[in-house]
Length: 399
Figure 1: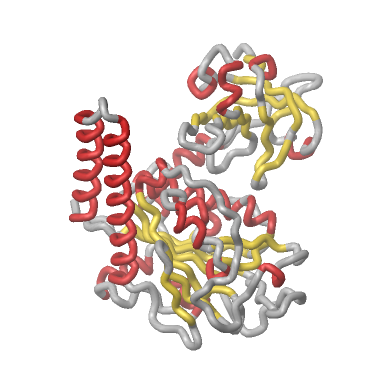
Figure 2: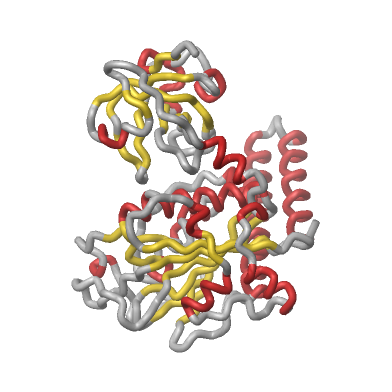
């Protein structure tokens, strides 16, 4: 275990100890905990910054403007007005972060020329897509806010951003939780003849492809994988978009990780085996396959639900995964039918304020059961869902 993680564990232990010693003096206890948590956060930021500097993301790129922020580094391309790439680290304790989106899109103060702005994206039909996902910074408010600088943004197909790409980001966070932490590089594939967003002061390039490189750099594993998605509405189909870092280098003409020892760099850049990150991936894929059922008149299955967006429906399927997010802003409960997160095809969502309307804990009681949910079907980030605020909206079917 390296010095950073030893420090984190020690400070966390101190926090628990002080809380116990000073439980009768709430003011003192609160201040001590606040100071310790600040030390933990400071230690984490220093660790991330040192890591990015020591691994060395890429060899210098012609005309790039390299900007370093609290928790990410961006190589900005002033010709295309988008980043060449953005590098950041997803810590293992991302699971416990509770900072929500700030949505404060703005120019990067560290860029003095050819800096894209909100007006360049207005009515363009594209989402302002994060390269380093904002949700990866929910452990620190400043880091979250800085992720909305345009040095971290590209024009991204709306359906891709809210659908398959969002699922990829969620999957990488899951891997970060399962591993120690992950080093992530994300960017567009840039070339001279890309189309531009026509309006605005600067004509922002619209990339045709977007990549994400994921690296676990802790010995003895040293593993890596990369993904390449076209910038259009495509299915998630994760295994069909796996590539090697070598192939990304050929597409972008960027030399990644030049500071690594050659033997490690060569090994990482040639890898494309998803089982290195998720040993149960194939088993999960097989388990996620299902045959849609006919539930009878007035009821639909999860393969039919997309045709009912904006309409009232009764959606039926088997509960295959469930989670109560106690640290979320609205403390939501997610109940997925037929396919697990992040490949979910339909989600029943219950907000924390409505949990008292249920005689059971939904994430525990409904697990493994076949149910029908009544309500209005909405679409959130490309996935259909129904929000239930009453127990009577849910019918448990007999197997």
